Image 1 (cartoon, rainbow, N blue to C red):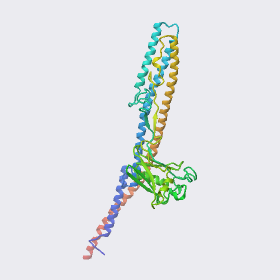
Image 2 (image 1 turned 60 degrees about the vertical axis):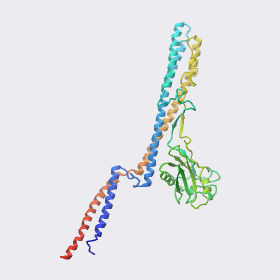
Image 3 (image 1 turned 90 degrees about the horizontal axis):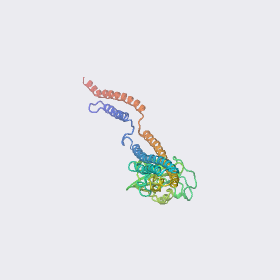
Image 4 (image 1 turned 90 degrees about the vertical axis):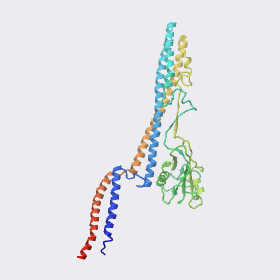
Length: 417
């Protein structure tokens, strides 16, 4: 039927042209931003995972900054300690010189004056070895038990009970091999009795700060899928990590101030509690706030001041001006102080090296996480370039098709000639 009121061909052409234009806009946006997932409307699940991991990269950077500051505190203390060690060597030289029996009283007094001046500099140097308000060598700002220097070593804190997979028998750790991350939750959870196994339909619930996220164990769901779902569902507030060696899934909060709990419930209303006690490593799955074990380290500080509690505890009483015997006694005490001081410096150096190793690891970890984010959200520009050209041609053809379709009603005029 020929009609001038309804041009179906033009409607179809316009619809296809609009679709092509929308695809072209999307491709151009990917090329402009370099991202295939730039917002939640592009892919909500991937965007949530990427944002959670971006948050983790930022957290890792903050941890690395904290390690840097602590290393600077230690390095400042090391510089002071090395200078103090050099001063003790010079004091030992004066003490040995004062043991000479041919020294006059005036000469001995001059040597003692130099000795005392060197000793005076020690406390001044120790008190000056401060970085960002912290000092690890003056025994004051970091006195043990009063104001220790704690450094955060990991961005993961506030750990909850771990989920256990791949174990059978009465207790975790006995029985079948550890499953791979591609094993399903159902087959991987072998409890003391089949009735207590995790089954399809059960829910693993994570409650934190008044919010509960429930992830259901559907048929065929793998451990790896479950871990990713936890990270996506919580928006990075709780991170699930699977350990290929132990077969455990551990949960970590994105801060160490908010506790959370993990529980299991049954979709059918029966047996959920029994399965929870088997599936969870501990029957109590309350999250721990204010720091998980091993995420922080307390730096061991020392006291290098004269008369303090450290290596130079009795240094204020060292005397080389009275006689050769007192000078000899002082030399022996200086040797002992040097031994203790150098041992303390070695400990500070080891702590600084350990922090440097941790920082190097965090750098590699951050690179790996950023690589993962890129694989999730970055656009393949070579592919998008080829698609752009194809869509541009398709758009031109669509425009021509629409123009042809718009001319179709004019054939009706020929019917009236």
